[in-house]
Length: 136
Image (cartoon, rainbow, N blue to C red):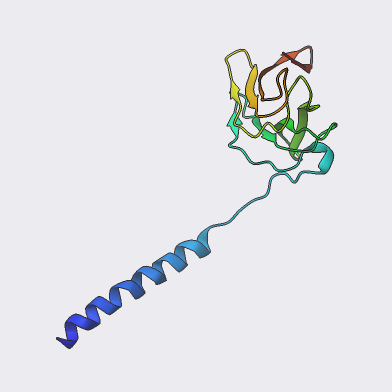
């Protein structure tokens, strides 16, 4: 009877010890830290294009405070961020916290939950053109 109790009590200790070893082996590398004009509250899944660039959104910040769509590109010196678009909070929308999608032509699509013509959100398209990005 005592042996059975010891076996039952030993199993949870083994699981906890294994979990601690696994957690200690995990590391995180920060590849970029935002400043306010680059965006605030990056709270979205990221998307990667065929060239390895990473795309995402920030809910706030940017030039007008309405959030941003950004691109991270790897350089020999680390990751470089480009703000593709800063939302004004007007007709273009505001607070784009959703994941973006990228088509084969490199266009970036997403949603902003507020703003727009009726104040209840927008669906947008950003397209690359001659080294810059346009909004549609």
